[in-house]
Length: 190
Length: 166
Image (cartoon, rainbow over all chains, first blue to last red; front, side, top):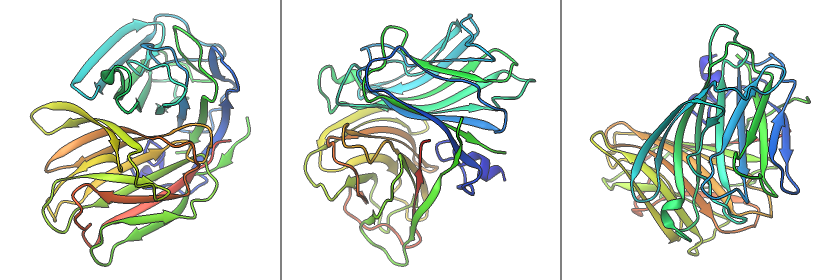
């Protein structure tokens, strides 16, 4: 059972029977848009997973996530840690008391090279604990432009609330998500 | 919100004898492919595990990686490659590492194809990679090979799952 739960967490366990991992909703952009929102998420599942690609992002911006119960929390209730490689060196960063979980470190504006991610929101409906986000993400641009602007990241994020998550927002604080961006939400049963 | 069961096993191969590569075709219609490999080489040769798509052997691949070898963390990249490195794995024939790759939006015909991946080999390295195949073609076949040109050892296992977005 544990292995089945973990299977959706970008592959850290045995694959589940396919009834344990369900697609919930998908947003695919046909033009620029400021946010991608998922609302009314039921408490049916044990964990949530976001999978997607982003294009035409604002260079140097973070991919950010906000969570909420009934509405998105915009308070200073988020923290994050990042371990990343830029093709030249490895580095780490952290932030606390933020208004969003900043997950990517940096995302490059590109209509060709997608930023890809898999983010897990663990125990999202539990009302006894803060909510943890764990992720793998990155964008590689074949050394074009500034070569060290392309990065791979391991991230963790925290929403300091014991409320169940019913709302999820993916956005770029400094600009719009671009055309052909797609974010899909999945639920993992436990 | 609508919900649909997904994360469907597509195919698995366990090598009965050493071979240099494994190819999956007939990928089905999904949004993402998840690939998991447990493998080592049959002769000592430290390697990157690599991907090729649709039999493309041109210099259309690139990657950026993050490595930890137990004493330090480092990063490097490769541009204009003939295959996409997606995990670092050991040259110890007894050490079957675990390598996992998310091939995102693989069937769209609009964007280049990104892959984000992780590798874990206890005796050598932990790694995370991001790569791009510079093609807007839908991916119809996936070939797993290694940068050293040696054989994967018998017992190495390669499995793919399809994940369909709502």
